[in-house]
Length: 240
Image (tube, rainbow, N blue to C red; front, top):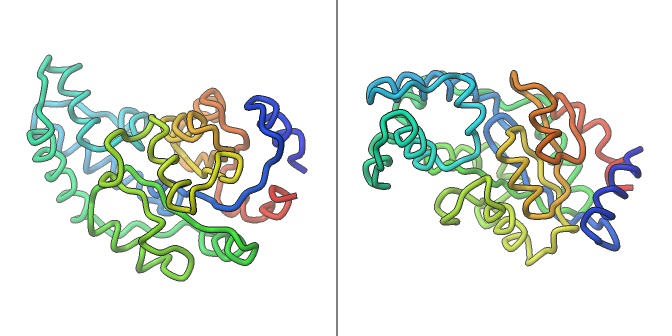
């Protein structure tokens, strides 16, 4: 079903074969329906510091390390060059507000898809720009049957976050030193898609938010679905 898209991917990079051995999932907006909560926490916390962060800003910068997002906004809106320590204190407030909100649910289809991936003999990895330790613990509680801590990439694993390719390249490394054509990235954010594409990995976009499909396709997504469930239903066709 997806032979055309796979061939285009191989031709674009000059790869000889598409041989997936690992699937690397983003977290927010892919595994959890958490972005609405993040938007509220971002807006409330940044307003405390005189920074106007809109919902569009939150979705557009999703995937970046939180401190990088804050330093960028402070520079653009206030002309301030924040140190990482200053930005971290601001991000800590955002994290506090986020964790005061109701727990975000797991998207329908996530565990079914992970089960199919593992049944096919592939590794499941999670690649997130988050540095919030409670969220990282929740990943292991929710998906421990499919992924272990050795295959989690967080803000603590890389110095350059998304949209740099480093997080997904780290994900390939942790999955056994895989090469780009041996991985699949699953992302919902433009910057995350850009990171997967920059790592030369086949990138599947899940448009679970309010952004137009073009915002993900224009970043180079190889496939696009509107839910994880829709991707799960055709998973076997991607492997063929």
